[in-house]
Length: 90
Image (cartoon, rainbow, N blue to C red; front, side, top):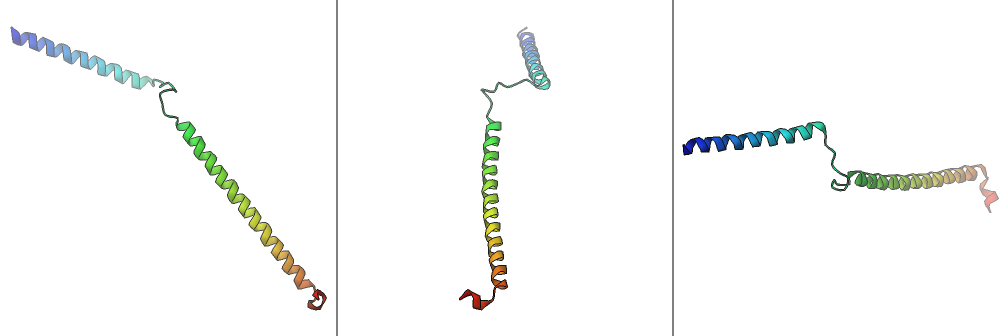
């Protein structure tokens, strides 16, 4: 008799486990929403990364612009100096 009670308890425990696992699978299938308060702020980190990348790009663009301007002025000065006779510089 004690063994039949043990078997019934084991079957009942197995049934409860199956019901719990089935409910957990159903929640995952329906796509439950995790509240924003409890999930990590991935969007915030991505936004900060993109802000830093944009600042780096702005710095690079500014440096390239300044470098281009310097090279253009240097080329204009050379062209101007090439046009002028050397004795007019004195």
